[in-house]
Image (cartoon, rainbow, N blue to C red; front, side, top):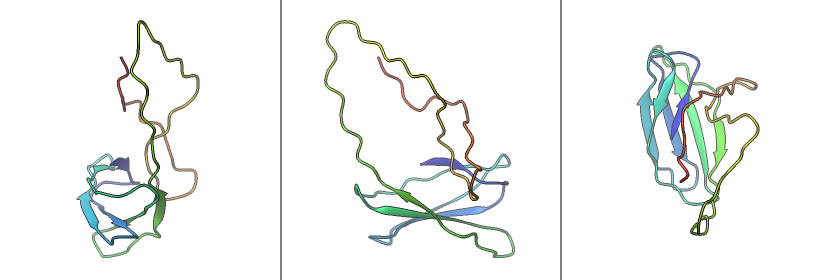
Length: 107
């Protein structure tokens, strides 16, 4: 799971609140991080960030959603999306920002 926090050097911990499985990563200088954590649909993930002196942020809760499969395409297909994609995680309200990176390629 990719995301971003307010600064680099923070230890980001993701915890599945159902299974208590955890994953940790240290944010890069730009605040970005990536973690891998197995979770089931409808589980809740709790993300916290810890600084070098041990201060822990309030948790950000993320629900694991089910994404239905698309039917196989036949012939030419196209997808038009008009709007803003936001896929970064912020630690405070209003801190979500788009990163402009591709998240999926549909052909």
